[in-house]
Length: 469
Image 1 (spheres, rainbow, N blue to C red):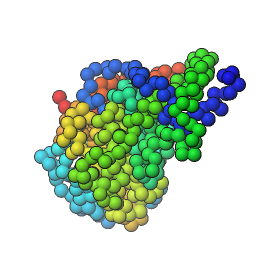
Image 2: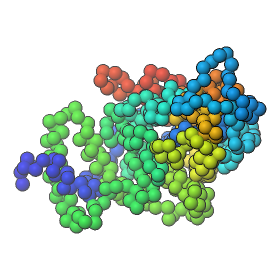
Image 3: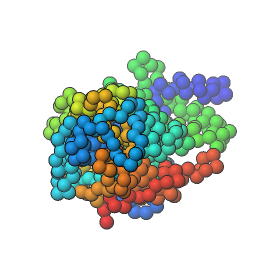
Image 4: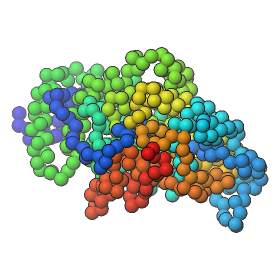
């Protein structure tokens, strides 16, 4: 058969219905491209990021402000004649949190009753109490917190880390995304993009609760004509066609990225069933994560899968809490007592379980756990009991490898309206994550359109106050 008689597009269309069989002959190959060595000795080898989609309310979770209690129901007036605006509403009256507050741990960190499980572990955490965002709109703010830029098209942190360090094993991706069962977050799949980096560094999406969590690993049932023999024959032809195609386009990374993806898919076909199968986990472990309860089952399963993934070599795992849109997430415009309570109950026990499980298995020593969101909420009401977007201040925290536990950096004003001391941004968050992985955020660059691009743009500093000595 003359290879030129069939185009690569036609041929791939016929063959790729069995994606797991692509590059079958590469199963015994090294398979992982050489990654950049760390710039210095890393404290962390891997990262799990828990992302609260929608804007988790700092003044109802971690940022205790007696002033909101004392002035509940009064007009919000920060003084100095400063203009008060909200994103999509008319500013209401000062609103205290509907939850009670108490101090926890030896560090005395204030946490509301919305998070009873995480509250027990504040001595393991390092809090960023004065984060700010340049935007109070979900899309741009979420891009900032995932990619460091307000606009789409830039590589997210997971892609940068995949590009810099690769995976820790050759049968799993370097970057895995576990979206909420209810849907993708704001910005959809572009939240996990490789942008202008080689395409194989984009996030591998696993739908943990779907009948087939990973698509295209096996030929479909209605394609009995795809056999091991036919795939071996097809691959021989495909190699010829790929070589010719690549020789004509030496500056196009997409073909090599696709080949590497196919090779990984073949290896992953062998690894994925065990990776995604929780049958080997004890019932006590499943109960710890809340998998036995309807409310916590989805997030709990994904947190447990995140632990299994970092055990098996995935470098960066992102676990999302909440879908995009105005409901079933942390975007609590209407009813903080009801909406935030529901979001917190789904996340709290599994997140605390992940922290405990990582520590019990010795994984927390070289795994960085990050909890974050795109912005916070206002200290005054929207409607009767909701809160509008607030880019002025919000809270994130670290735990694990290289982190000084029981610490906090920065604080907001007396209202939890604006960050006023020790202000940090997404650039600083990313610079610190890269630092703990042994990467200098100013040296991790990629030439694109004549510019040496980086995750932190031209900003950012390592937040050394949260680093262990």
